[in-house]
Image (tube, rainbow, N blue to C red; front, side):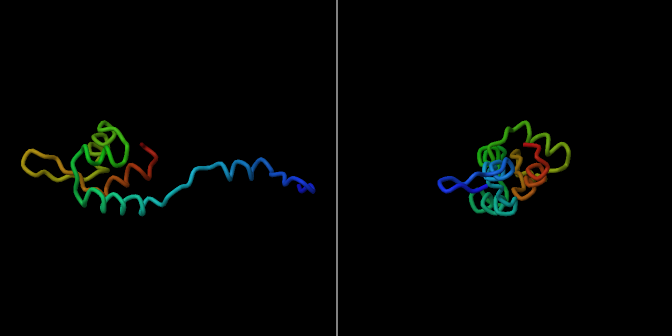
Amino acid sequence: MKNDNFIFLTDEEILGRALAVDYPIKEIINCAVNSIGDVATMNEVANFFKISRHKIYRGINEKKILTAKSGTKLLIITKTVANILCNNEV
């Protein structure tokens, strides 16, 4: 609806404009790889993605996140974190 002084929006238009920007997961993962590397520690992954260590461990246990061991350190394959991000499990 249009008035001389105002432009009125429908409810759908208002909600559509209020939604958060949804960045493609591929861009987020590429940014993570550039920032923390192809493999990263638990703390680096948790800090970068702002997710808890518990959620990362759950992803590892469910075989959604791949890991590698270097001595006693558990290293996470950064690209595999997308498996829990895509499923809205964060």
